Image (cartoon, rainbow, N blue to C red):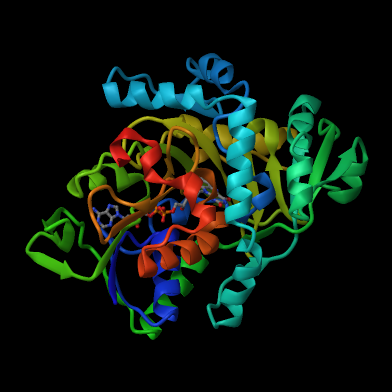
Length: 414
Ligand SMILES: Cc1cc2nc3c(=O)[nH]c(=O)nc-3n(C[C@H](O)[C@H](O)[C@H](O)COP(=O)(O)OP(=O)(O)OC[C@H]3O[C@@H](n4cnc5c(N)ncnc54)[C@H](O)[C@@H]3O)c2cc1C
């Protein structure tokens, strides 16, 4: 069976690996080099215990408050386009406790195995930087900590509940934190990795396994006959296959229209910058500022902010400056670097209105599938998604863990 995967981000690459490992022939087609989308810009956290869907209680009020502040953690660039308005309405409808809780339960069930598989990848010879040092959430505001603790029953069921660190206990855990940090939650089983190193190593492994990787080939056409996709094309080049998987991150929505669907996936832009190492013990979530701090072997990565706007990777200096300032009130000895000292990158998280991935068969086609909208957790979800999607593509079977993520929950996916 020959599968053509459209999009070589972490979702496309890990699914290609799974399919090839199970004996399939695979071609990955990317618009540019693989691994350059959101998969290059993220914080590299593998954090099932933190994977709450984006819309949650209070999101509407926060979004309205922050709408006028371009340097706020969440910024919505207002637009009157009907697709934008209907997406935002869908997101606001999902911004409540019961929906967030149900979404979190579904996501936890899907990714039960993710943490283990990242170790297996290394054992399979995919050589990348991976750290087992847990995740610390650092809070200025107790209210945020209590919101997270209200999910401890669910994370506890999966054996990944946090340890509560009140007052100075958080500094005993991480001595670099300032006195303004009033408490923390430590999740001991979470991992972090070097995002660029991971996609590079995965690409190398795919080539070694005989997977064809076609770069600088933006897919712009789909040929359909008798309810089946027979090929996709990029300009004059056509790629034939038995099965087709759309995994193009934030670009999945426009591409889905070539397949006769209309999936509501929009970009939630974020940024990363890299600085010299600071000596932090592990991955730290500066929770109130919504900035992720990732200590890698030879550098420190800061990533964060969510911006709803167009499908572009333009960098906003105002928002990068907000990320650069964030650690000042959390980390001792941190000196805010000038913008001119860093090279910021922008990446687009692919988001559905309810904050959950969209995984399943595309409407009215017997051999084309989508795996998208992994929002803030595409790294965390990648291995588990890859295993479930490979099964879906190979056997046209929707495993029970995938049912909540069906495209059919949206009008454009039916
Ligand atoms: C600032 C930030 C921090 C994050 N931190 C984390 C984290 O710590 N942990 C975590 O789990 N997740 C995190 N995420 C989310 C995670 O990065 C994404 O969910 C994930 O990268 C999505 O992967 P993807 O493969 O779907 O999309 P992408 O990585 O964006 O890949 C899509 C690919 O499709 C290609 N493409 C586009 N158009 C076409 C076309 N026409 N034809 C062919 N190919 C095409 C693109 O070139 C690209 O290579 C973060 C995201 C951001 C932005």
